[in-house]
Image (cartoon, rainbow, N blue to C red; front, side, top):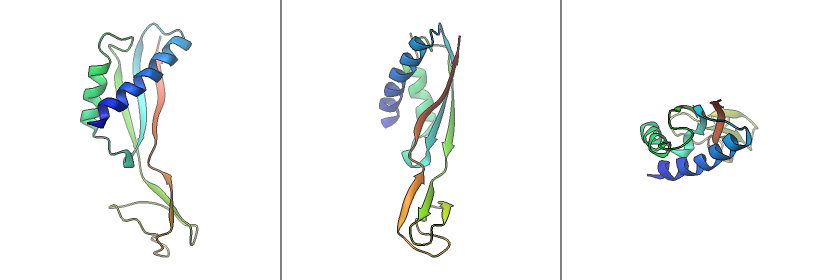
Length: 113
């Protein structure tokens, strides 16, 4: 379950931001996660809830925004979202592609006081 390790790493960042911004508590953390990260939402929420115990974020909720996989064809420069795990260009059917979105793992925002 890589969700636990990811959440633990994210809490290091959350703690740094809370200290820098002099927050007394964290109410909500919003994540943006690329679909290629293969995060299971329920496992991520469970890991977050487990990690937040006895922290400044003990009462925090979590929001997860999943970002679609987007590719750019190096043959015709067409940009597209990947559907049904089909990794070829829908314009020219080329397979020389660059990933332009889908592997992100970001803390989009932290709300607190």
